[in-house]
Length: 226
Figure 1 (tube, helix red, strand yellow):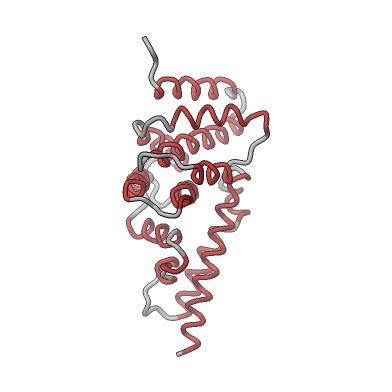
Figure 2 (cartoon, one colour; figure 1 turned 90 degrees about the vertical axis):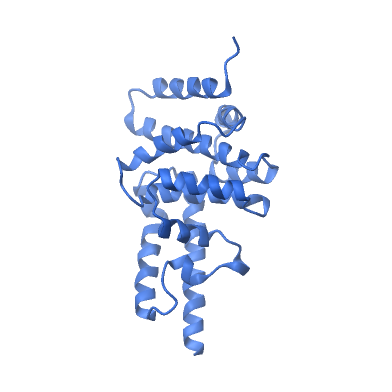
């Protein structure tokens, strides 16, 4: 009897766990990367097609030695065969923050990575948006927090700086600056490393910092012009 893509992928995951059984830190980092690979592939498939741009965006997040490229490609190709099973992978990643913890920053890092891939072909498709919203729900990311993440990933000409920072348009500049500094602190690359995010994932932190800085600069310019 032929095995399904899901069964084959599960077999690869089990091999990874066995290989790193004696090294909890390496096993955790590998588990993060493998689960991220699975979600990336399944999210890219959500709109029915995996484009070359999405594959390149995935490779941007996962710089890897040539010796590992074949293994990562095998995992990605197995996962992208269908969307089925993505909820179980999302649930495993949610465990990185413990049971039921809301708005976990590691999971926000993962969502940012998924958005990076989703928009690589120039548009976030409706089915990709629904996929991302469901993953956020599994991650216990509340609606307001998710909307702030979405705002970061709209295209620059459409981006609402207040939505990016998660503040009301009638908030004082002092209140906005306090929120901006909080988000910048959480998004600093050193903080991501401290959260255990693989170093090759730091492009996410850099992109986030650029958007946060631009949002605050736009608000500050607007307020000074009044």
